[in-house]
Image 1 (tube, rainbow, N blue to C red):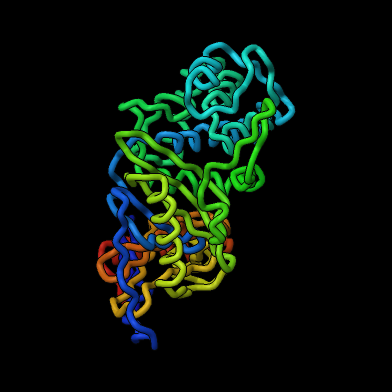
Image 2: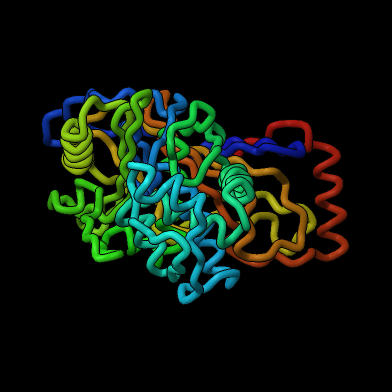
Amino acid sequence: MILRWLPLRSLIVPVVALTLAAPAVLRAAPYESKASSAILVDVDSGTILYSKAEDAAFQPAAMAKMMTMAVVFEAIESGKIKLSDSFPVSEHAWRTGGAPSGSATMFAALKSSIPVSDLLRGAIVQAGNDACIILAEGIAGSEGGFVDMMNRKAHELGLKGSHFTNVSGLPDPEQKVTAADLHTLADHLIRTYPELYKIYAEPDFTWNKIYQRNRNPLLTAGIGADGLSTGFTKESGFGLTASAVRDGHRMILVVSGLTTDKDRADEARKLFEWGNTAFERLRFFDRGEAVAQARVYGGSTGSVGLATEEPLDILLLRGNRERIRARVTYDGPILAPVAAGREVGTVRIWVGDTQVLEKPVFTMADVGKGSMNQRALDAVRQLLIGWLPQWN
C-alpha cells in the first residue's frame, strides 16, 4: 500500500519499512573513538558508519590545504592555469611559508619560478606552506584574494561550519572547519578530480635537492589508504582526513583532537578496520530499478519511475535488528513534459530513528504532454481530490 499526498508539494512515499531477521553472526560491538571529533562514511552508499561531534568547529591546521587544492584543481580543470605554467616565489611566500618560517615547507627558493605540477606536489606530498601561497598568488594575485575564492567555493559545496582565513592552515582562531565539512570536501576532491587526486597517494617528493616523504601515516599501513591530509595545532590537537579503498569500496574518515601523532595514526587505522569488519552491505535497489513512482500532471502517462544514479546500498551494523525505513520525497505532481534524468527529489533511509543515507532521485523516462482530454481530466481530478490523501 502506498500513501500518496496529492496537493502541491513535498509528496512523501514510504517505499520500504521492514525489520531484518538477525544474521548468523554476533552483534558487532559499537565503537568509541578517542578523537574529540570524528566521522567515517562509506562513499559508495553514503552511509555514515560512525560520527562524534561531527559538526563541532575546530582549527584545521594543514587540512585547510584541501580547500586550497579544491580551488587550484578547479582552475586547472577549467583551463585557467596549466600544469606547465610557472609561478614566481614572492618574498611573502618565502618568508611566511618557506625556509625562514620554520613551518612545513617545500623549500622554494626566493625569486625563483616553479611549475604548477611541482607546486602541487610541494603542497600535497610535502604539505609545503610556501607552495600553497605561491599557487594562491599565481592564480588570484594575492593570498587574500585566493582566500575569498576558497570561502566562495566552501559555500558552493555546502560547507556550513567552515571559514578560511589563509591557504596553508597556519594557526588562526578565525579559521574553522568541522569533521562533516572535511568529509564533504574530501569526497568532492575524489569524485570531481580523480586524476589530480592521485597525487595524494605519491609516497615522496624531492625539491631543491631536499627529499621529503608524504606526511600521511596511513599510506604504508596496508589498509588501502590513498589520501588525504594531516593537521596539528595546539588548540585542536592532531587531526587527519583520510580515504581508503578495500574490496572495491571506498571510505572517508576524519578525526581531530588526538593527543599525539601516534594516537592519530592508530585511531584512524582502527576506525577504518572497524568499519570494514563491523558492517554488512545491504542493497535496496539496483542501478536503474524504480525506487518509487511520481505522479505526472497533464502527461501522456499518469506517472514516471524514479531511480538513483547508482545502486542504492547501505552498510548495516552486523546483528542490527532495528527497523529500516526508506522514503522518497519530491515536489509534485510533476508537470508534463518531463525529460528523463531530471532530478526531482530525494530518497532517505533510516535505521531505527537515525537517518543513515540521503541521495537524489531522477526521472527514468520521458513523459510528453497528454491529449487535451487527458489534461482536462487531470485538472478535474486535481480540483476535486488534490487536497485529499489518496490511497492505492
